[in-house]
Length: 459
Image (cartoon, rainbow, N blue to C red; front, side, top):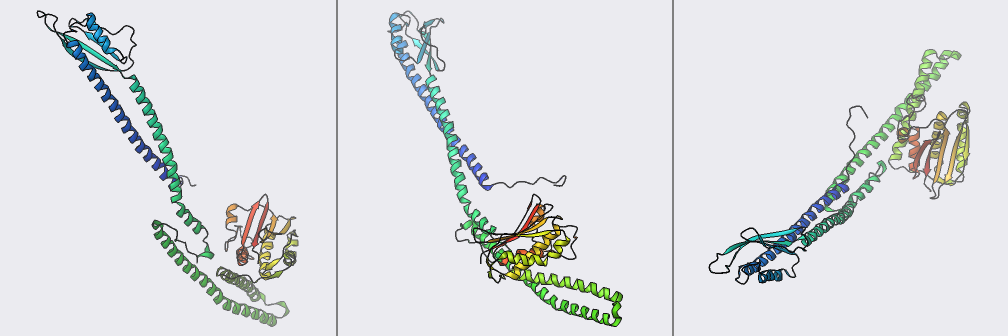
């Protein structure tokens, strides 16, 4: 990555994004519901406690304001207040007289309250005799609310756990629903993955797609139609150009050969001098151009659906041996030996196999380490297909080069040391021959061993 260039942003998953948003919304919604439940319950507890205190207030006003209990300090008055508190251990009562003295203090053995709700009020006590004036009593009534607080605490914890559990359940359900909802998108991706230059006639099947994806399917199919038409026009153009070039090249070849023969006869045994050299050089280039045009025409025919003309072949090892004999001189010059390992039989196009093997062995001869062996490995696969691979020992091929090894006019050797003899179509033709047999080309390079070959489908 270039210095100062922004770092690539990894694509965000639509499934995870929708699932997270659904989880957040679920937690917010469930949290709001739980909060409302808690507040309503707490308000209900508070109202119930207030009602209880008000009820007790009415009873105390009656007890402390009556003539019979004009003095809470008297035995009958204290007895009435004790009866009032009997069975109500959650209440505490304190009565203070006008002079600030406690008329009715809490029982000394009563447990202290950790949490309470308090009500203060005044009661006008009746006079004990007509000559006495009425006194005002200060009453403090406390109610123990600790059980309610504990219950509210447990309710709050339960609601929080319920909100979290509900969020998890809803999130998992949402994740599953999103995963199922995106299944049509994955199906479309699987269909598009099967498309290639040779299958542009295929179209995406929108029969099972939802209505939201129908416009996308229609637009994509329309795009495939335009691509198919453009590709057919391009291949037709390549074939037409190759056909048109064949005639002038043949004429030029014949003219150069005739001129060379005539020049040789006119100049005698010494040759034709500089003119002969120029004509010889032109003839070599014309042969090279003719080879390129012929290869391009072959590739164009293969891309337009030409199939191999299969015939029974008893031994592919024998076919490989015939091609090896043709390359014997080149192998000896490079200090290499050739071995054929394995054998198979089937229906194949022998002339096409000769051409593919010749390209593979020639490629291995150019890049194999001197003194090593070039091996042609033939293996029958469990599916019935036949794998035919040529391997050589030498420097590993870079993975980026392997990816483009079968591209037209691509050379892994940037120095182009063999550019005059090879124009970068040999392995592309090998790939085309594999496709004409219903197979594919294969290539790998690791541990100093490079394997390039083709897999041929059973006839």
